[in-house]
Length: 349
Ligand SMILES: C[S@@+](CC[C@H](N)C(=O)[O-])C[C@H]1O[C@@H](n2cnc3c(N)ncnc32)[C@H](O)[C@@H]1O
Ligand code: SF4
Image (cartoon, rainbow, N blue to C red; front, side, top):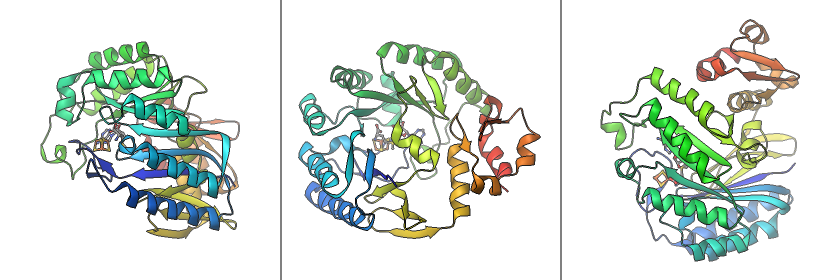
């Protein structure tokens, strides 16, 4: 079975005020030590899985764009040597404005990078400061354009629902995004995570009703289609790596802070990078996971025998305003998407 590869890069120049992702503030880590550990894991999985095909590689973080090009090259070469990297593989890095020069971007492209996910977050420099970002909006626009000029597939990450933001502000953000020329973006509602500076600040957040209005306004005003709760793309430009995760496909998580779902000898394994975990999962639990992630997508979940066993079909059929069957798939309606977590809890037996 093909396995995608996720590689975690757990370093950031500085932690942002809102972020609970696993990363430490460290602009100059020991990259050789990092690469040594990552390559060791790559060899291990290439070996136990007998060199499966790799359709996508995603470097997430943290801040993968901090990585020197020579380290990126070593890691990609190790994947080529230990797996069957698909000729048309999607290779993405998450890139923070202010951490990658055009020379370095050129080097990354030569090595095989073909997709860039830029952390724009906001077009307003005051808001960027408030979020604790290290760059201006202009830096982010320059990086998006540098990616487009190099014919990369370019995505932007944005955070909405900041204290004081209105639906009109969100519509303006969508209009600006429509004019950049990117074919993908992720629109994240600001989540207040407990163990972050924002978690201790008692911020005056927009109400749930306003957040829901913003969510609907994005779908209406962005010139891209929503294909997952927070993700929008020009048709055909969806992130193949994440789509596979949501569809319940196999992927290997490499590096401290990474998670994967590996399929080996007819069994699914829950796996954490840095050799922290490799435990079998029952088919039933894997089916539940597939429902949880698949329902986040607009096309929903394929109802195969395993999924049919763990969902409450009667509940689904009696809530056509929230859940719809489409051939052999089930998906949430627009109304259902607004209460997705609750809906999934009721759908799974
Ligand atoms: C894994 S992070 C890393 C991306 C990259 N380091 C950057 O910051 O540009 C991916 C995205 O998650 C989003 N994010 C992280 N924490 C968030 C939070 N608490 N609320 C909303 N979005 C968040 C940000 O938009 C960020 O770009
Ligand atoms: S949002 Fe990105 S740059 Fe900021 S702390 Fe999180 S991973 Fe690092």
